[in-house]
Image 1 (cartoon, rainbow, N blue to C red):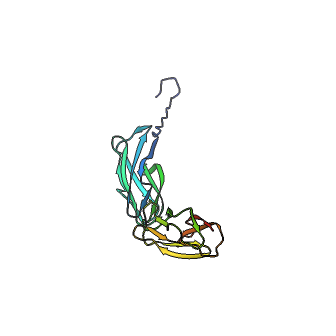
Image 2 (cartoon, helix red, strand yellow):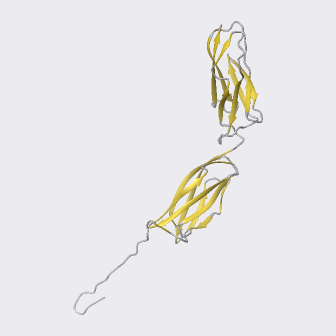
Length: 216
């Protein structure tokens, strides 16, 4: 713009893009079995308000996982949904991204743990703890242990090592994920406290300990 007798006035204007954010509103479960799906919902906001019609791209690390769908469009509430699954155990970093003009505007990340339902990760005492036993007799009840997976479900066919008085006995869990052993105290044994340590044969760091007391 110019006015006669005055210097020309030049105005330069730059339009700043509105801030866009994406975040996971919900994702469940965060620990799932191989082949199981986790439902995820993300929300896209523009200047703090829901952005409809935005394209959300879902991705993850690892080639043995997938999203369905891999791309989703936000609704009037700025929400988009997809489902994650993986065929191999592991810890996966999953992401939801929004792009504009061919460039990624914003990305949200979260981790999901995938475990095998057939792998025991914990041992639980069912019965037989803290018994009092006389020398030369058997325990009043069997020592019973249950092997469970990461989801708290019993796992059959798991080898467990029972260690007592320096000896080790290996037993395999039954269809209910449990195994029992009836122990005894030999004649000539010392009185006092003792322990039965049960561990996963495949992972000896996973243990559970039963206590007992030997009396004359």
